[in-house]
Image: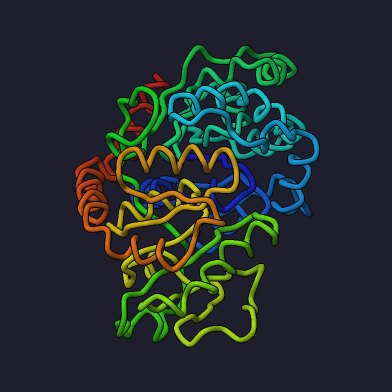
Length: 381
């Protein structure tokens, strides 16, 4: 059986699906990813990739979306989680519209891949469209605590894309739910799966092998954010670091290999490292609230402080704050006192470890691959 994984062209959309792809391949199936931009990094996980958007970078796409669909980046309305989710629901058609210009390129490659099963992430409506054209089953793969109901395919831009290709959008599509119990908004799916972090590979140096002498705090901005959004929280941490009895490790990734000069003695920077491996050596993490980063902290039982700059991340952070697995601040509120509070918050630590145990109890990617194999074979009868 051939399984096609369809992801938007971004690491944060492609990487969460790698563990399930590995599970399918370990079971003897043929697996291929269809993505673009820095989502092609899944090739470093040993997985074949079809590039849907040659020559197009993820940063260019994000800049275009910000220019053409400013509604997606406006501050979220409402203070309760319910109000924030409702506000984001009203924006979901814009998400579908933003991707519409790239749907046909995805579909053309999906046709050539000739899969027996399509696993796609909910932002990328090309997945279910390709499955409908090829008459094969499609399954959505959740990425975070925010659930994207299949009803998004009924938004006008998605309907137009389906009809452009001569098919109708499906009435419903099963969704693999990786959200920890009690955190996610909306009703759970009956396809619950354990979130297994995949954050890339790399050689483990002394940073990861030698235990720190003081509590270690991981600071990361993730990917795809403009320099201004990347630098502000990092600058706040660096300014506060001399007044905190801890060691800070700031991961700069591929885009920012050089750190700022004149760092305090208890701050060090690093380029790309296996994020999950580094996180296992840390007492806490400070980040910008991406869904994958927040779930990785939960999966490893690490307390976290989120500084979410965009509406989608504000909702992720609010969901985790409501469950008690994260502190949430605005960048200007971050100081030595806030970091000390994060490190000493035993209630937060206890809750994160409870959620870690709940996540561990969910079915593994291997179990999900077996279940979905049955779905695909049943569809051929």
